[in-house]
Amino acid sequence: MAHFLQHRHDRRVAGFGHSNDPLLHHERHTQGSVQKYSKDTQVFPDLCTSGGKNLRIVRTSVIVTGVQVCSRIFMVWFITNSIRPIQNEESVILFLVVWTMTEITRYSYYTFNLLHHLPFFIKWARYNLFIVLYPLGVIGELLTIYAALPFVRRSGMYSMRLPNIYNVSFDYYYCLIIVMLSYIPLFPQLYFHMLRQRRRVLHGEVIVEKDD
Ligand SMILES: CCCCCCCCCCCCC[C@@H](O)CC(=O)SCCNC(=O)CCNC(=O)[C@H](O)C(C)(C)COP(=O)(O)OP(=O)(O)OC[C@H]1O[C@@H](n2cnc3c(N)ncnc32)[C@H](O)[C@@H]1OP(=O)(O)O
Image (cartoon, rainbow, N blue to C red; front, side, top):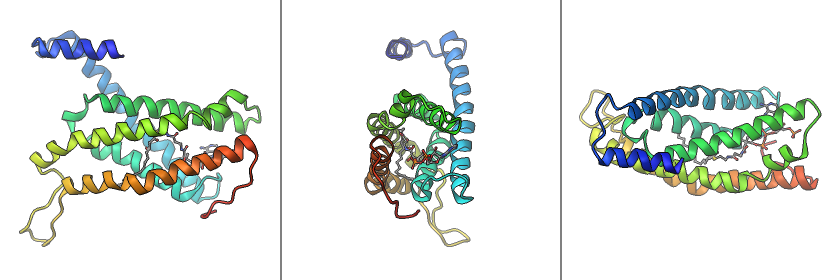
């Protein structure tokens, strides 16, 4: 992947940017596929999980799952899908790869768990890989939002300036800064929740969740 990115950068610097460039065509095609895949797949399973919790179908935590779902929807729809210039950022690739690895492990865990044939390495992966993947995902997401800030400020997207008929002002630029700051209190909650789940599942500790 590093080689691909370097090659792509070199071609841009060398002026290979015209619309017939086969690499860019391939890149746009790949990007389009990844984009559609992410928009559909990241949101639907998360909504199922949170819906499942609310209907008491699965035993997951509402608050933790809610924050996780909101951040995924926000990253997919209100950042990456809405702000085209940032779609080629390396940080987007970082969080997409990390999310993908996480969800392959998570849904393999759910599936084998339901079948009552859970291989230990899947259980181990579900409750160990997050230790590294969670921070990496957060880094990718925060760098992506950070990269979006100049475009949001310049375009004034999703913002309302006074005067207007509703007499309301909203600045998406500052909203993004608040979202970035909200990772400081919220991310540790998710991370420590997973560490508690890890102790419960891998070491058999009895843990009572506050919102259960
Ligand atoms: C409007 C602006 C919004 C702005 C938001 C700002 C938010 C800021 C902070 C957010 C930071 C988030 C960053 C994040 O996006 C980065 C990443 O994700 S990077 C990738 C790494 N991520 C992870 O590793 C995620 C790990 N976390 C989790 O997996 C979660 O905490 C979560 C899935 C949400 C909850 O896990 P938990 O272990 O508590 O519960 P489970 O749901 O896994 O399981 C409970 C039991 O229910 C069974 N279950 C659940 N779902 C299903 C299903 N779909 N099918 C079958 N069974 C299911 C599961 O097997 C468990 O059963 P058992 O207890 O018997 O094992």
